[in-house]
Image (tube, rainbow, N blue to C red; front, side, top):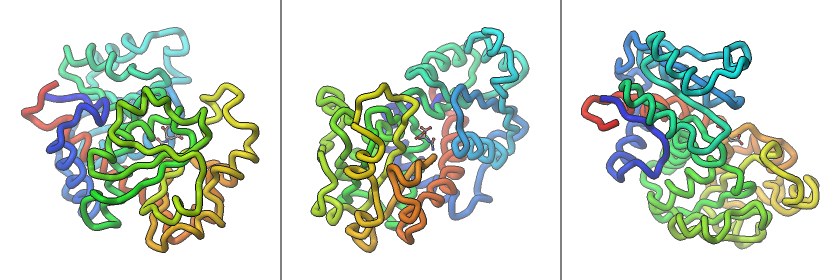
Length: 311
Ligand code: NCD
């Protein structure tokens, strides 16, 4: 049996714990990867650009003995109008055993999974619209756990920026409170989720501004990219003002605890949401996140292909 990984919400507490500890184990001992995908072709279908997620899924598939097949969409029949479902069915006809999907429309991986489940083929969500990016949240949590050498409960994480358009933030708003983390979000009002949406997550606090008190109190800061491609105009006066009020500048980073960790899912806009200098601060874990990302995706694929699961 195989099972699709579509969101954090679908995972039980024991599944979450197992995925996170397996990620940390694989990060320390990459050779402990199983051979769950030995000889299996796995297709990567990315309808949106990606560097880290695609390459780390490819590396993870190889680590498990599988062969990643990235469909170059700009050179495929998608350009002739072929639908996602037909594209997937043709890949299955050609022998693919799993699909890693990134799509600009929220909910697409779930839709596709309902079709591919009939063939026993799992779908791994590599980011759908503004909805979810489960493997990113898993790697973010694992990065914190690795540094803090244990569970995250009782820690305080501040997520700054464009929460409204961020699937990374939504998956973290789902995951971190479940791990006992206190989460505060901060950004321009129109870039924060509505109260109605926030009420679907557990106990998230909202802060309008990055006060000294807030910066001094948190154990980690997660800075989000200003997703200009998803924004109609009018969320904040200008990029300069955004940086002025919500950028993690050098001066603000100086207020963070000496042991606070700085995360960013990438890609970054240096000089806008985060200063280039802060990206290379000794407390920055931005590149470590990328490395742990491979382990998180190996763990996710092992989970998806583990026997005994339900589709
Ligand atoms: C993110 C994404 O595509 O959701 N990047 C990533 O996967 N590391 C975040 C973003 O694009 O800002």
